[in-house]
Length: 158
Image (cartoon, rainbow, N blue to C red; front, side, top):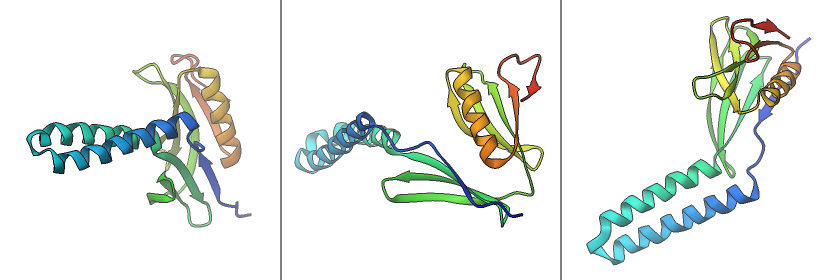
């Protein structure tokens, strides 16, 4: 039996994040305009405009993953509004979903495929949240969950 395609999404951005992004993009446009009007301070406007643009991207990019089980591939997608980009990655077999504590004290959820390759799906500050999301992803993809976050020296399969 061939499974249907599965999409795992972080969801849409909150209203506050959209307001911050819009403010940053507006400041970027203002700096671009001012750099043509006030030629004495072009460098300052360019620096501040670039910084605002980067912050705007930070608050407006959403990520999702699309799995095509029929063709054994997945796509790591990034979106800003209706603009999407990402690449298809071929895999032989999805292995498992793992949760572990990284060096920055965040719990990472990784999807392992082809036995030794993986990519990061998301990060959480709370272990319970990370395990709940990992269980949901594993349920959708019909995989096992490897818990290395509860006790890194005593890992277990859930």
